[in-house]
Length: 388
Image 1 (cartoon, rainbow, N blue to C red):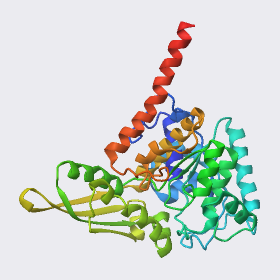
Image 2 (cartoon, rainbow, N blue to C red):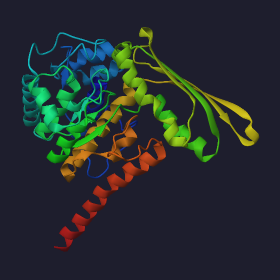
Image 3 (cartoon, helix red, strand yellow):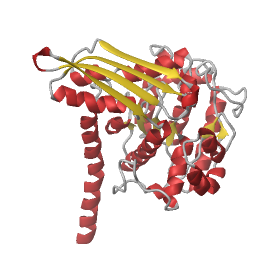
């Protein structure tokens, strides 16, 4: 999806695309789409032009139009660990380095990118899904313990955590578009709050779960009881390949499965979610849902939903908007968990003890309220400047 996001912005710059699919548009306070540049890491050394051709999300004309810009974007060597993600691995990576040495490399890349682009930077985790470690491990909960684990190159520190730590140390906002345990590590949250670094995540809400969080509030508000909801997915891109590994799949299922009960306020006992890697599908994911509901007088009904998605076409705009919002939060001086961005995620991050809001209408209202704060502040500043 990184190549799709970068290509989309380049096509906007060239006047070859419009803002369809980009939900926030040209709102005051947000950096303009045409002001964005891209860089990043990958376990595969191919430039974004080669990646775009490989993934086959863009059509031939779009690739031709964006060719010059995409060919210039070459990934930096990435951090990988087969013990956390065995489904996807590549050779374009740093060798046998300690955790601290890896962090130094990441920080060097971030600083260089920020200087070369001449602006601010935001880091969005788009890597393949990692297995979920034992979250009760004290190294994840105490800052000093996490730092000591870094010093010891503890094998329970994942690559995603290293990226999040490097971003926080650089003062770079961090967004987690994956289900991996990284920006939501309590020790890292505490560090981000102290450093005034915004965090958002986790696991981008693009297709099936997006539809679920739209439909479930409607059933709730019409007093239609959900008796069961069966969801299955097939996809064949690198995300699907990574999810073919059972431990990574478990991380994904967890973020997709926590939605319904919180929205409707009761236990939907028969809520089943399946994800299958099916290579011929490529990026054209298929999400199929069977929904059993009871209506007036207890009469049963069924709803069938078949969403023939283009995974990266749905995800790339959200990645772009998350980056713009995180940049805005940084300029506002906001740090720590940025709850209003929950509308973009399957498992939104919240402050400890707070109820997670999954319903799309409520999430969208929270985002609009947060965005309006900047608009009103700008209006106030303009009026004050005019008075002076």
